[in-house]
Length: 346
Image 1 (cartoon, rainbow, N blue to C red):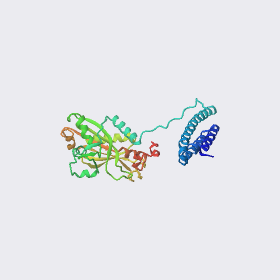
Image 2 (cartoon, rainbow, N blue to C red; image 1 turned 120 degrees about the horizontal axis):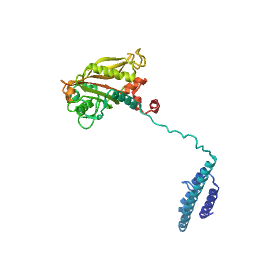
Image 3 (tube, rainbow, N blue to C red; image 1 turned 45 degrees about the vertical axis):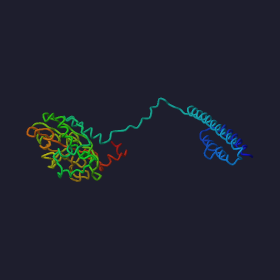
Image 4 (tube, one colour; image 1 turned 180 degrees about the vertical axis):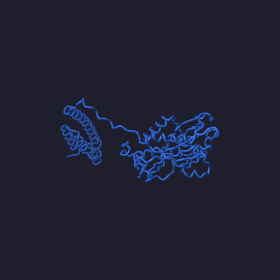
């Protein structure tokens, strides 16, 4: 049988088989058998070069014609089978339109966002407004105006990310926002202010279960006339009771921060062990919740206030640390790991 006859035979056989196909799976098998890369029509086209020179054009033209005819026949059959299968599915399947639809899985607030909102809510109840400060800061705002001039040893307490632009850094704390808040809201040192400054901070630190290179802080600042240390102690104690519960016990420890004087750490009695000692509180019975102190006169002056007339207090806390304490979370890296098994618990 000549190659021409074989081609016509394959064409007729393909048409007969296509006519008998009733499902999509068989249709795909037919396409692969005749029109695929190793299909019979495709392989016969490749045989054109073996024919005598005078027969090649005629054979090639007919082979391409047959291939196009089969492609069109396949498309028509595919459309007919798809319609038949859809009609069968609709006629055999039963749809109860009175049944409730399936609910989409909804996302939730990140645990850091949840605790930030709760902290902001409490401070708003206590008369503090939110002030947003920038995350990329000048060295002057982040350090110098906070009583940390160049080469001050307190700068070594915070490993800093410096940018390629000189004297521009990723802020290591939200404390720099104190200067901006005083200058913007203080009206040249003539108005009292009460603000909190929530936001992200960045430090070039080793990532461990208790430290990250990025974390949130909430700074607080109150400036007025006659503000004393007792006002600070009473304010943070009230905050702790609103956040942790009315029976929360608070203690104060002397500390050092270059931008406050005097300075103190604020602790609460551990809610996990009730003060008996556990791994969360490092068996001390107490949990640190914030650092605080009276605003240093140099910082007041840099913010535009006369320290002889005005005074104030400041505090700073870590929302992720607070969330860890409240929920017995052992590893701060969970907050940034994007593991849904952790996030969906909140």
